[in-house]
Image (cartoon, rainbow, N blue to C red):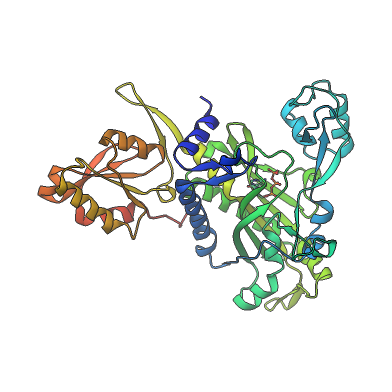
Length: 463
Ligand code: ATP
């Protein structure tokens, strides 16, 4: 079974993710989240915020602007260093990322390879041909800066250039002093933020895995120099807990991968990626980088502010080191979908598709059905239940098919519980509550539904 294809179809058919600008033929690698997708995405961001910000005394949040002073990106090294190696097929003019071309065709890692080495492989290896037209006629590698440029104000001139941020991180660094002074946090402490980032990727693809507009959930954790490695390891463990215990992703589909010395970004003295086994291969889900004092030092040098920290207890001044756990919202959502997608054979020989999502991230938490839609007494009770739960849970009402079909529809989008109001409900004030995973039905008193679901949807953060 081609899981990726199944998941993409499910997303399209059930209003999770749509091709952007579809009525104009679509804009390549750009996606919109539909009615169910936006719920799922918001829920992922909500549990992330709960686990990484609210659950910890050493964390605060921030929401900085996408546009920043252009000098931010000079100081951060992005103007000079944020580029990918690019080759063109001379015949069909298609562009490729040189490292991806080699990795996809030869199945080897290019981590740490120098430019000349990539060039040699592309020019000399007979198997490396243009995936689009089959020609073996590539230009030499050129570098392509990934930042989107635009102009602030009505005049399009160099002095007015601004960039769409390629990471949310810099918004945190430039606010370091303001956050420190206003929140009175002491090192070690961190700042988290969720927001859009933009990269003019040469080869986006694999659905929402790599796009040019995406969302990140990032933390910059400020520590005393020399202590960064223990903090890095802590964040790797804490992130693994988030994926396995909070999001319920299967252990065996996750791995940690340490960057080799040659592969490390210019600002990092150690980086560990958490990768997921996607249907198209292992891919980075989160990067946890020790960024040293690279960013704060550079902003100290290039801006009007000294980003030095005074440690009162130790009576010493230093520029903090930074550990950065950086997640992609869209990649996390794709991971959650792929990992939860299950096809089960039932006893009667039929199959059901079920999304086994953690209950608190499911787009719809409870669906209410009347057993008979033309029985006013049943409908009245069902609508009453809907109304009583709506403030606390994401609940829907559906009467557009038979109960069996309605169950299947909800299984497919991961709804953890379905309530059916039947004739017995009119007599004893109980309803059936069906569990998505076990398909077992139990009778629950209408008066205790709220309590039942509150328990079922609570998140255990103490792990
Ligand atoms: P990759 O090697 O896949 O290009 P990266 O190492 O450049 O990723 P980081 O700069 O570490 O990525 O970004 C942190 C996180 O942001 C990634 O782990 C990923 O989840 C997400 N991310 C980065 N680029 C994209 C993109 N183009 N589309 C979707 N998510 C992205």
